[in-house]
Length: 315
Image (cartoon, rainbow, N blue to C red; front, side, top):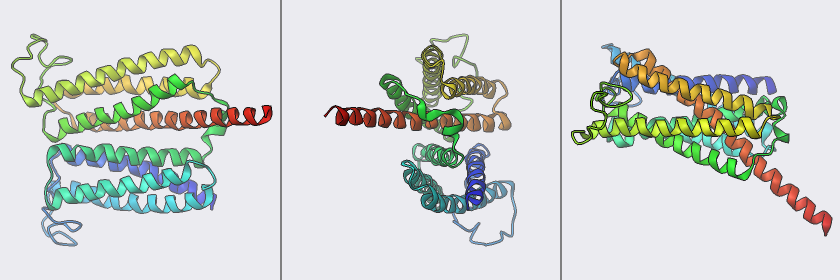
């Protein structure tokens, strides 16, 4: 049973990454209507008679999402039964399935009835939450905590609050990035880091698309500075914690690579592989951040339990 659950966990995690990248591919190639306004069939047919590039992309994304959805559902049920005694398991099992189904319904609604770009931009963020929940389930199943001795870790309250806030902020930035893609604003600014490097403060002539693009860049820049500040804090205050030091080294590397890819999207005029890698890296970064949210939650609980035990002993 345990071997089956571990296999399902790995397949579900990798599969969810394919769902995320597939969704970005659909957006980048404008293949969202590759199957017309028919869902779950393509042009009302089980096997489409006329095959186009957009149809292949859209139909492949639907098939992968459906297959992964089945794996995640099975993983959630088995994890609930086998690891239900671990506090976070049931919540993560629910979240992974719920948000995966939700993103599928939003995608179906977009095909059947159409949605505004501002609503469609939520699609990637919802998938990201599902991916993070599946990843954390996988960590629990493989007992990552024991391997890194994470149970002995205490994270200060101030650090915990910053991690919670950073996770929410990262989701907001992900939304703005998805919005940039959906409104086709990826190349409205031909320079980097400013919209026009020759006139960096020429904001008066910005249109809505340029404001959204530059708003996304500014928000991402703030996140990078924030990550660097927390990284320095972790290196200084958590010298004996392998999981904190290793995790934040990876987090810093990912966010810096993400910025580099964002610049390369402009330089290469929206190269498809770079754009898809851009989506993959932010998913990995959010996954690492989510693990620290899990550790923060446990740290707060251990602190509370320890305090209660001490109070009972004194009494």
